Each structure stands twice: as C-alpha cells, then as structure tokens.
Amino acid sequence: MAKILKLVEKVIEVNENTKHDVFFEIVPRVKCCEIRIYEGGCKEKTRNRAEYIRFYYDEYYKKEDYDKMINRLEELLND
Image 1 (cartoon, one colour):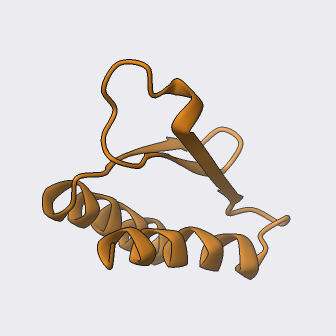
Image 2 (cartoon, one colour):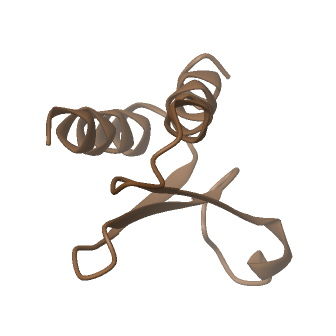
C-alpha cells in the first residue's frame, strides 16, 4: 500500500509543478496500477503522445516495473 501512496503523491507533484499531465488509475480487482503521461499537457491532438506504464501489485509484482514508473515521474519533475 505504501508504494501506491508514493505513486499517487508523485503523480500529484508532477501535475502541480510541471507542464505535463499524468493520470493515475488503480484496478483493485486485478491489483494493477497504471499511469498515463501526456508530455506538455493533454490538449487536443495529443493522443499519439500518451505514454502508459503499468505494474501489478500481486504475485506477479516486479520491482523493476514499479521502479520504471517512479523513475519516469522523477524525469518529468526534472524536465
């Protein structure tokens, strides 16, 4: 649970402090979290710029998937 809260905090931080828009989705039934990133914001004609990153927090959990998500959010904050 702490990992999910950290992700939500990072998503909010990116949305409040950068020009990028990040959406967070959690699907408890399948124990999955996903972020959708729009670099530069989610204005019209940006569908092709959406980037999706997902990780599962069940028995298929992979630390590298979670780390990839956190690292990508950090990149956006440092942009």
